[in-house]
Every structure is written in structure tokens, then in C-alpha cells.
Length: 151
Picture 1 (cartoon, rainbow, N blue to C red):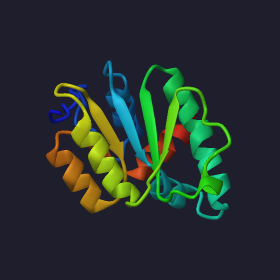
Picture 2: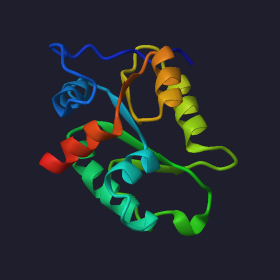
Picture 3: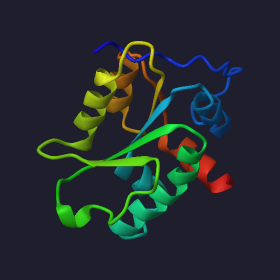
């Protein structure tokens, strides 16, 4: 497995939390979007139950996947009761088992073939630093939440 490639979308100097930058990144062919599930949902939907948070995020990501982007969402925990009954078409949902979702995200990015554009959505600084060192582009949770809200 090689290092993931950094997409080169022509960001035009956009800030990392600009939803338009995320749109540019997702327009790069073959991009794999990896989402730190609870990091995003607790930022945007913290008042909801965990199940409702997951459902809301996954329904929003369905629209992203429909645009041709490969989408993987990683959640902490291996509890079968925590799993959604049915993941939306085009959205792969993974629950970490025996590790935290942060480590699962790191493994997913490390396993990508050389040249594959990878975008990770997380506001976790340690995860962000690690995946960027592997060649992924990282955007904060708020950028994805803003993009999902405007659709």
C-alpha cells in the first residue's frame, strides 16, 4: 500500500473550513471521502441521540455519494445494536472493533493505493496531522456540516 495522493483541485486560496473547498476536493475523480462519524455528528447534531445523529449524517452523505464520490463513515464501537439497519446506497459505514475510530481512519488512509485522492473530515487535530502526513487532505467537521446544510 502506498501513500494516498493529495487532490489538486485548484483551491483558489480557500480556507480549510470553506464548504466550497470541500466541493472542489470532491470534484476530483476517484476521491475517497473518509468521515470521522461521531466527530462530525457531535459537532453538528449533539442534541440528538447517537442513533439520530448517525441517521442524519448518513442521509446527508447519500447526496455526496450520489455525485460519484466514494464515501466511508467511521464510528467508534463494535456494538451491533449501534449499527444502522441499512446504510444508504453508496455510503460505507464502519464501526471500529477493538480500536477507536481514529485508528480505523488512519488504517484506511494508509491502505489507499498511491495516487488515490483521499479527503478526511475530522476536527481531531491528532488524526488530521497523521492523515495529512500520509498525503490525505483534511477538512474540519464544520466544512462538511455547512456543505450538507446548504443542499
